[in-house]
Image (cartoon, rainbow, N blue to C red; front, side, top):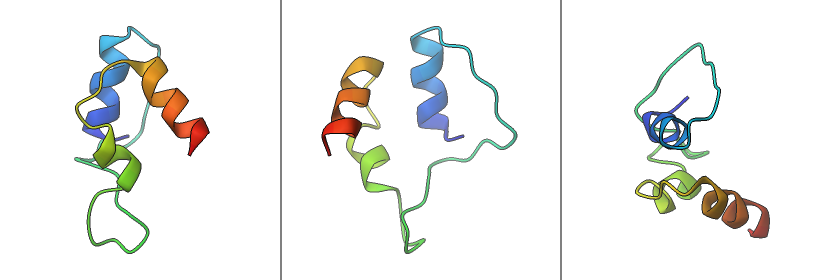
Length: 56
């Protein structure tokens, strides 16, 4: 799980578990951050993030 996702889940008081915590999810080329995570890295509204995920 990424540190960005962890902060969103904690902010929204969601139940979660993970085995590995990473700074961020890598893009497919492993050259940087996943575009979706990069786009929403400062967003804490989990409903907004979810809407954007299913609409893309």
